[in-house]
Length: 481
Image 1 (tube, rainbow, N blue to C red):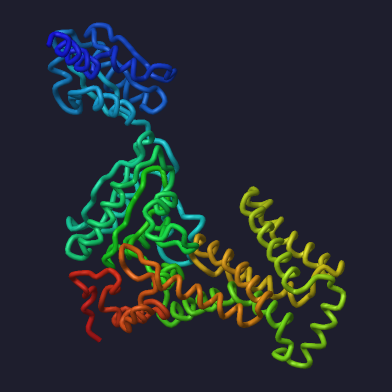
Image 2: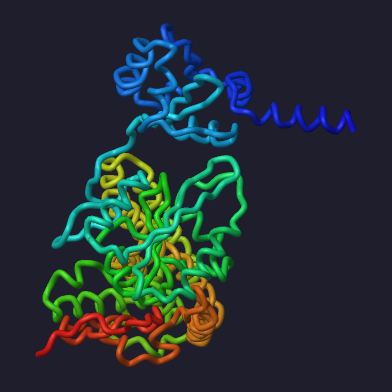
């Protein structure tokens, strides 16, 4: 019995927020500072690398150094000091940018985190011509503040989560009360709580952990760096999740066709926005099918080529030693290498490599007889078409799909191309996002949603929220025309 009591007292002593226990927790941390203050006799523990040194010395160290030991308890018992009752709270506070003050057998935390990171500026990956030009940054509080600045309503609710056994990364889930479907809130909250991982550094990593179809090539959560896009999704009955350390915010539930819309569509007249959206959908079909169709026709279906063009094609391919399939794969791989090189190099050099490299290599390949002129045109059109898709993640997925369709077209002709497209449609029909169909409003068919998917209807006609949100308050505008 005595041994049990001794163990209990020992375990309790190890969890008490004493200077010794805190310094033991931060053993071998060279940037952890333990400072003894003269006058008051208080002990101070903090990390020099994550605390604001000016605020610490001006508001804390100077005040406590000049105070007497008798007045120390009175000073730290008032705001902005917060009591830390156990070792875990104390350690977490210090790691969050607070200084721990040990006084009269009590511990108090003084928040003075160093403000690091870049200022709010335009997103480089989602540029627009008209509309707001601010973007998210890597600070969670700043990102949530930008959203609240646009939605000044008490109905904008937030829930905070912590993910990562080691990194302790903060997340904030945002939704609008009375508009959001709480089944979605409950489902997404459960998935976020179920994530068990050592650490995570970006929202694009997190969405892969909570996907319902993790092996699908298609992105299932819309990630964006634009506050206006997130606000639009929130007003449409969606949920937004902001992650500390990531400039990307993801929204749910999401449908496939949403990846082809841009905030630009809503800042211009609706006929122009509709034309741009149709152009992007056309670009989607071109980028996955055009090169594959070339391979299919030149390998199996010469009868589909007009006679005058057939002569030019035969002359162009007369010096090419490779079959169309290998020729197309070689050029597509070259284009992808140039694209990746341009993305990884510094901006000015990357642009030069992309333009000059494409022209020089393409011309040299034709002259050397490695490829034909017509294939160069087909590959270039497919590459350009992929650039009109606003979402980089969706664009990357479609580039991968293009290779698969080229191989099927080279092996089975038009039959293989149709089979590949059919497989993609069947696959997408089975994909869900928080239980909602990925192909909404195509499957299931929702005629009202077509006004804001294939086209961008006039605002007076967009009276209801998207059906994928299943909002209890479906009406979003009451404009009378």
